[in-house]
Image (cartoon, rainbow, N blue to C red; front, side, top):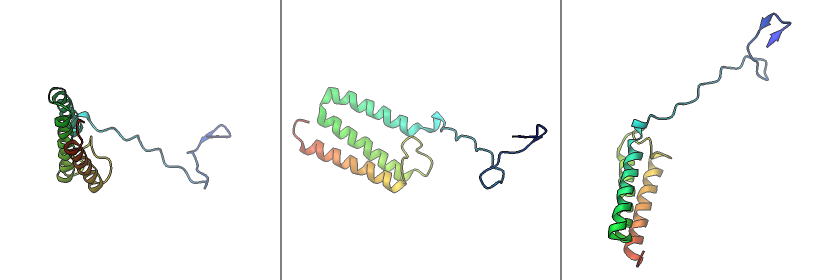
Length: 114
């Protein structure tokens, strides 16, 4: 702001104190650090191809295997190692991946003609 056309002052907040400068925007993780996400994507593409050749039940077991692998990796690899698949806390992520793997495997085993 310009006071009487001569002095320049820092922007002030509601309390009359100068406001701190805005922090820079956080940078997205580098693509090379997202190897977990790319590994899972490649595994799911392979599972999709195998599903076309072998059938839905084999494909469902493949998806369950990929989910179980992601859950185990989330439990074992220290933070922030799995940039592409970290969503919540380690425990919640691992429980979600392993629970979904168990549910998909159970569905693949029990559902006829999936």
